[in-house]
Structures are given as structure tokens and as C-alpha cells.
Amino acid sequence: MFAAIEDGVDVITIAFGCQGHVAFHYDVVTSVSVLAIYKGITVVCAAGNFGPSRSTHKNEAPWVLTFGAAIKPNGIVTPTMASFSSRRPNSISPGILKTYIIGSGVHIFGASNMETKATFVTNSGASMACPHLSGITTLLKSAHPDLSPTAIKSAIMMTADPVKDERCVNADVFAVGAGHVNALKAVVDLGYVFDIQPDDYIPYLLGLGYTTYQVEKMVRKEPSSSKRIAEAELNLPSIAIAFRPGEKKKYMRNVIVP
Image (tube, rainbow, N blue to C red):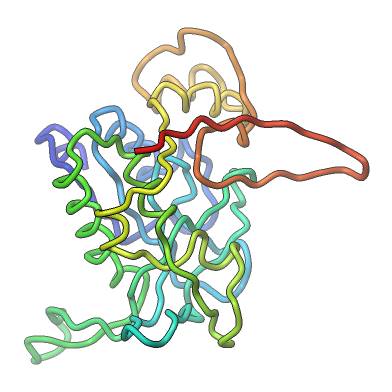
């Protein structure tokens, strides 16, 4: 990843995650991917194949576009969530509503591994959706070169299609996030755009309880202030808030209308 970041690529795709739920500063993918965001690089990661159990989600940081797997739609049938696709809630940062999106990851035709003599095989998994999501991300970047990684993520989420789960009933947000990615709509109609500057993640990390030293190790710079914000204050196109009985909370969002 360091080499890719230094090369100035537009998109980095990662089809794996740490075992278990690992704090951000100990998670190699998470701690390195935040550096990519500072370079304007979109990081696309698989959520994992540990569903349908809850809290099995990988790559939980808000700056990563994390996706699950679905059965590819044929234009008539609504996309169906794959039962193996990992689910939320997000254990490391419960106030971040992930998976953000799902993409086609069932019976995907591709090159074989070294264990078979066949040249091409079909495979299933969140990893199989990696080319799907990274390709759409690249199309968006090509069509709208000024979009930040967060704005690209926003465009993909705000134009997603409804999804059925593995029981063929309407899937909930803990399973599919915004829904199934719609490449054409995402590129042609950005929808409402939510954006975040990389430094906005610093008060978020401090608000989660990470020390100044731990945050500095992740972002490779000393925080300019000790400001802390709640997870729900990040300007994301999704939100998750826990309430106590009778409690009221207010959070703001800034939106750009293309």
C-alpha cells in the first residue's frame, strides 16, 4: 500500500481485513489507508464473509469504502444479499453505519488460483465484488476528477438500489447499508454529495478515545488541537445514534447539490 500511495494511484482495492475486531491504530489496513485519504486516493475494502451473524464486519474505519456481496441482478430481479456477507453493527466505532454498500460478488467469473488446472473459474465472496466497486470508483473519478474520496463514496451510496436479503425480504441497513451499487446512476447523477476533509477524522479519532500519540502515528502528523467530536458529527451520508429513554440529540450535515 505504501508504494501505491507514493505512486499516486487513484484507487486502492483491498480484499482482506484483520481477524477479529482490532483497534484502528493496530490495524494495518486501517492505519495505512488513512494516509491514502490524505493523498486523495479512494480505498475500497471487502467487509468479509462471516455473515449472516451480526458484528462480523471488517475494515470498519469511516474513511474506507467497505462493501458486502450480493447476487448480481439481471435487470428485472432486485439484487439479493448473499447470506455469507458480513453484517454490522460496527464493533470498533458503533456510530459509523457500515457496510456502506454492496456489489455483485456471487458466481463471479475470473482467473483461477494455483490449485486448479482451469484457466478461469467462478468464485463467490466480498472479495469478488472488489473489481466491481473499484471499477465504478475509477469511472466516477474519471468523470468527476475533482471529487474527494468521501464525495465518491457519497455518490455511490446516495444512488444505490434497494436490496432483498437472503430470505428474499427487504434487507435492513445493518446488512446492506445504502443498498446495491448502481454504476450508471452514480456516474451520471451524483445525488446529494457529503464531503469530509482528511483532518476532520482527527477529532473523530480523539472522540473515540485514541490518544494524541496514537492519532499522530496513524495520520503521520501532530493534531493541531485536542478537539473531540462524536461519531455522528462526521459529515457522512449515513448516521447511527444510540438514545437513552427520553433523550434528544441534534447533529448537523452539510450537503452539496451538484
